[in-house]
Length: 476
Image (tube, rainbow, N blue to C red; front, side, top):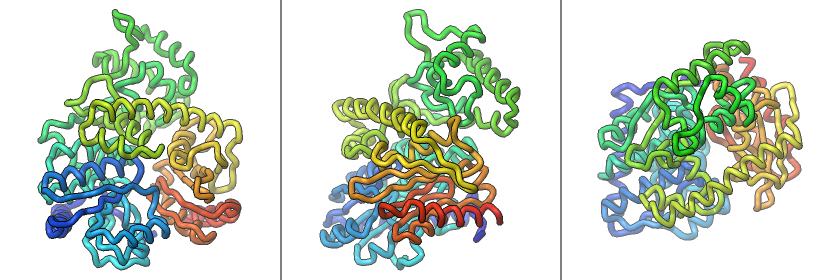
């Protein structure tokens, strides 16, 4: 199974990580008379990473420009080489494409699986180089924050890095951020830009009415409540819960008193136990939540999870500049536009889940899959796949694989799995990479969540190869 990945880094690992961060900062300082091209991924982690990078460069007086990529494909890598930047700073990208970028003068701050074919003689900060798990120890925004800190960046950007980490689902396994992420948590607290609280971890704590939050609850799913608005209302009514304030405003979770919260959590726990869910599922109800106290209460920016979703609704729809501006503090036109995009994003997610319900999920022995064709954007099929895995109709004991057509005429593949499968030996990043290579594509990611791009018409062959790898991993 390979080397066991560490969860909590020791002092010696921290020292080596900071030494690498300082090495990257020194390289960037040596280009003070040049322009640094920041290259980032088009998700919440990539957006926050790019914001952290440009804020630090700006503070250091270094010129920069910004580029965003869905992935480092050969044609995009060639385009970057043709531009011949003075130096490229890959943030939340780059580690998995070293062999494509050997001719680019670069530094890399990433957390994804590392390209075994590429040379690694450049300044490269990736937690996996230190035996840490890139799915839980730190995200791309986090490694970028460490390098930015060494460059003289502000601790106030730690909250932005936390948004990236939560958007990357770094906290889902244990219900808290761990590993190198604790450095970011500490810095955020010290700067007064982050509050860490123990609370119910369902999405929508700030902006959704409580009944709506329970209706969409999926980790863990609430039997007899999740998925049905009327049943969510009934569940709360039976508790004697008052859903609105005196002025008629729907109550969000963050508006509730401690006793109200305790009563609702206790009732959910009883439902789970009565329906045969084990204590492990009950324990997942409550954990750390990350609040940005300088943001307005009851808005998407107040809660790290909701902030991350807002960012995904910009970059994944071709507007990363909007998300970048919000990360850098624009609370005017950029935020207004981002909220409009968020409304569209939510509709697309609902429609995507309905499409999966319509086309159905096909089960194989070791995995399950659906094909959205052109019905779900390739940039959000992974999000929809993860949401579908937590809903009725999908098995949770095998990975879920989703296919969608790309504008470039290829097929995007996303795979998601529950954490207990990872504990049993599942590594979707390795499996997707191997299966994609088998059909002439490319893949990678993290152990519980990974993606690939493959040629059209190769889906069945890809599934055969992927299932064989998954079977071997889980039977070890």
